[in-house]
Image 1 (cartoon, rainbow, N blue to C red):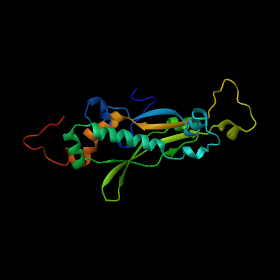
Image 2 (image 1 turned 60 degrees about the vertical axis):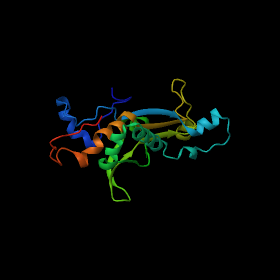
Image 3 (image 1 turned 180 degrees about the vertical axis):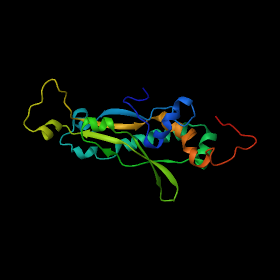
Image 4 (image 1 turned 30 degrees about the horizontal axis):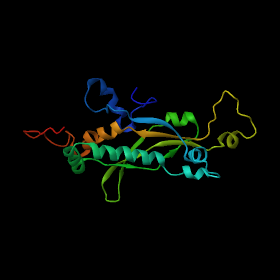
Length: 199
């Protein structure tokens, strides 16, 4: 599998999937996303550091977006200098929107990273990435099921922060290939007599 869960391509790639068997280069070869289950910040502070009375609001920031931005920054910093130069000149940048809250495991599992074209404050076209997220407080069962006791065979659903994360390999593939399609695609220009290949 390309990812931890079934990772259907984002909608802006979906129509191209029918040509994937022809190896056209239109379909990304890296995982679309990484489905992760992390300890919540609230529970890390309470159970890990022994702090008392930690509010669930410490889990409010868009941690998934922060992690995705780190993957993207790593790819930009790690790519070959000629590649980052070409990307800076012709590539479509990734920007990261607030996380998208989901309520309930099936809704989180069925959701995928969203890639949407947007225009930034400078008027440039960018690709906005938004991550599905689900988080559960330390007393999740009591808050949602009240006096009903949790059966022993059901694991405690509290203390988690779930994220759909951008694969670092996908971020790298974006910089090398997909970010260039809008300005450097073959449909926009005739190939010059001599084409320089940069790896």
